[in-house]
Length: 115
Image 1 (cartoon, one colour):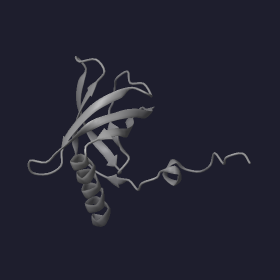
Image 2 (cartoon, helix red, strand yellow):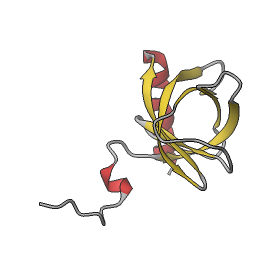
Image 3 (cartoon, helix red, strand yellow):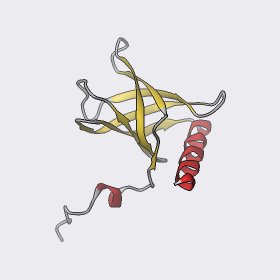
Image 4 (cartoon, one colour):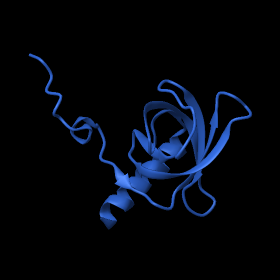
């Protein structure tokens, strides 16, 4: 059977995404000189979308990410770019420590509950 291309990306996602508008994310790309600070558009337990207006980012690139998740709580880890579009990049988390993973789960739960 041929896959139905009309299926939206939301339906293919493994985890629900929660909108975030005030989550500032710091990214460090493969090049040590390439640092970037931007805002996330949404987040899930498996990844996040970061709003960017310019840059030469490619699917498959890995980035180190870091952001605050409340008072003195830091999420940090590694992610891979899985989609690039004119409004930003979609990241899939590939390496997070247990504390960071739990903080992301907490952020998603709180944002989804708030509606």
